[in-house]
Length: 257
Image (cartoon, rainbow, N blue to C red; front, side, top):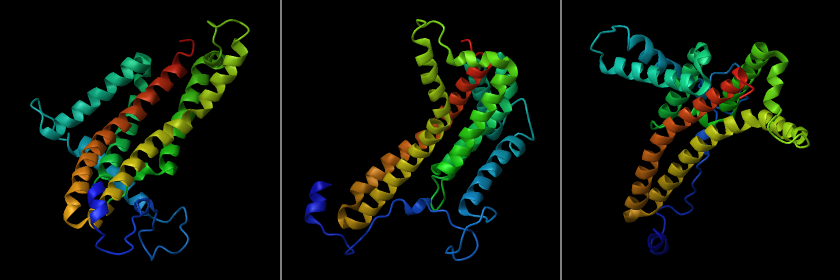
């Protein structure tokens, strides 16, 4: 690739690569130059709606004709159901199973949004911090409310490290408190950052493919490898977001642990 960049000139002079253009929020109607209001349908709205439609098609219509010998769609739905149910039970405990529908919805929405974002000419909603921050804040508020409702003031024991020396406990309590309120920040940035980075890298290599002429096969091979990695990342990031939600829920249900 270094040799190709030295001996070959771009086919178009002044070729510019703008990897972040793919993340622009644009209204579905109009020229896109006007002000976008909160009620304006945008490409983000469209692809979030498509993620919801995909979930409904899988879990409602795909399993409507349930049978002892499941179809492929029913098998996928049952596999995802069992996978998330076991995660919630193993990580957060049996008393967290009542929150399974919420956690299952989070996982499926993020996973389908990630996979839909890998389609050509699509829009990846989970690459926007505005989307992932709302998801993370919903988890944070839910966990905090559950913690105080179930344990009352005992929930504050989550910040008091009783196993530490007495002199260090106030300092550790401040650190634990800061760490707790940073959770939604790390929870949201981790997802958005990983998804955005992968798509930006693919766009950069695509720009190289358009500039290297006969040597375009080199960045195309790189795109193929990165795309395969992004397919894996799409699932892993949904898994990480979900399992962290289970961990936070466990802290709310069992703060003394």
